[in-house]
Length: 358
Image (cartoon, rainbow, N blue to C red):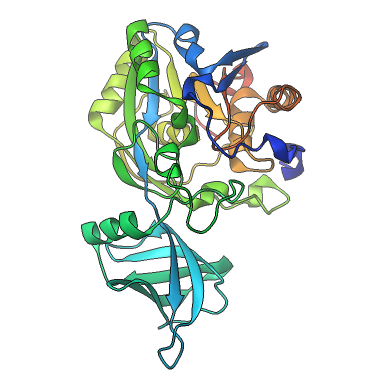
């Protein structure tokens, strides 16, 4: 399918630089047979008792580091920024470096007197393998002490970041460290909203998908068939699978909060839509024509043009319907991307059903 079908123009002033305050005041566009303007605080009134809301409990690591590469004579050298995006083991990570061209295997980056890394190898597209002098919990503690939150490039920050992003770019459900990007649909939830959903009879189920930096990578091919999807590590526990299946069997709808929950649910589902326990990596890629099996509704933010995320929502709700929804959102001043507003999608009947996927 042609990638340019998923393109659109977005005024830069609609790219949110801060989350809505209070969170429940963020706007929520209902996308079904019609379009309806709401706010996130209205969500309990839009769901039914017995519905199952599935959220991602991954926790974002402050994995953007700025270090000094010493000169050959040991003198202070150039400043290098790295963003970790995929662990290899307890002490080695793949990262994107800036600038990457000046790094060579054996080079050291010093972040602090007792925290440094060595370049192990260089890979394609600016990717570098680093080995740290710390591992496991000690490495995670060093990231907490010296790293900054890995905000996407369209949110403008200095290298030092902003202290408020430590909370703003973390969901209420964050519990399992490992993500290098936030599951942004979950950023809208507050304790008050969760309590209101519970009072409505909506059940909230956690699963874990560690979001990778690939979620921000544009599709650079001309045809979706030629795009290689990034993989992300996820887990659906036996208890979570059982709760989702039980809720759906009783007539409740499964509502995926975000693209990460959608990816993991569809990866864990059999052809009938039954969810099984899952632990591993998923690289599922949704484009129009995919038949969804496990999800009945989806809450998600507004996404980048030509991105796999916009392709996902077009596959679920229909490309023409999403083009109309985004045109309405732009004309109405909705805020886009990670800190922006959200939409609540109903499936396109033509691309939904408990049958085999694409």
